[in-house]
Length: 124
Image (tube, rainbow, N blue to C red; front, side, top):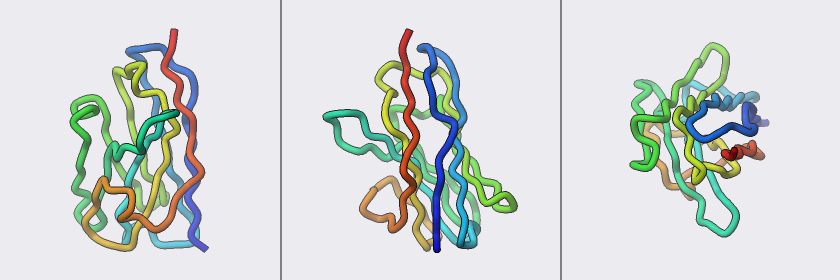
């Protein structure tokens, strides 16, 4: 059974950094495109970043370009989201999702399997 587990969330001051992890089990991560999404209370879910299978090509929302970096370690079955220069508006529940396809997207309806999410709070 495919399972995704996020970790690495927490409280950070504005301008700080966090690294989120998305650990997959029950499937071969290499074959899946992985996306990171976030949702704050009262707001729509936003596709933050994604990484494709095979070539590892990446895609970022304009709101995080230059500050966030997505990467994958297929041997460890894990995808990471390095978040630098965090802003208060970045506070949300961050979730990873997987889909058995090569090319990733930041559209949440394209994904079939989801983790439970990890809370990121950006505050002084």
